[in-house]
Length: 316
Image 1: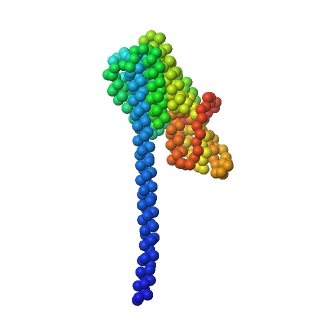
Image 2: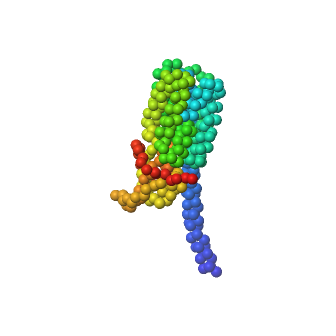
Image 3: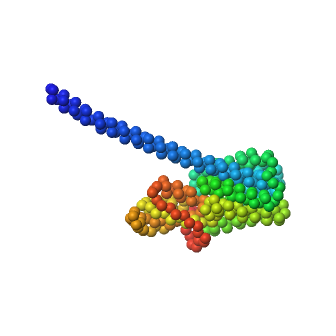
């Protein structure tokens, strides 16, 4: 009996360290998961803070510099300024209402994540338009309004786009036209804006149309600096171990075809090299998809000056 008890005691004591090790591993796993959740929460918080800041800066530029001098922005905001001048309906209400159809198109073209961030940005933008509307105007000098209004607008729009949002829904229509007819996004946006500035020239005088074009140019250059390129087309080169999986995800979720090549790193060995062409609004989504699939992947994004041929899948 004594020997049996000793054996039982030895077995029970030998199991204690194993239990402690399991508890310790479980605690470490919980800590790691908690840190991961906190990191993800802080990341999302930072993104939405930047979307809010960008929307506020853009609204300030429009209400305090452009609107007082009857200088138009392009797209939905430009149309809203014209209607506001003709009817007296609040600019904040007009921009939000006119953006809703484009936002729904954006949901179809770019997906739910873009829809949420773009919708949030547009709501915040309209809110700050209402906040800044009764404030005293910064200047009545046209040249100062063009220069400072254009710079601030470029900063605001650049921040919003850099963090996956959008303030002007006409770009989503341009992307849809690009996918259906292979017509460049940048040219579509420019075409829309030329029509808007033409209407502004007839309604307010062609000097206002020229001031608006100059503002558009300044905004584009500032956005070029912030967003690392105003060109709509971007080329992404992705070096990864999950080439086929990432290529399939990009094709299914973004509608972009991918060229897969074999490569070999000096230290890392054999790798898959993916080449994909997309527009600047899709860069954020691409980086997010790749990070979720292969966090160790290397991504290089460059500007593309011209595209010849079809690089997207046909829908419908």
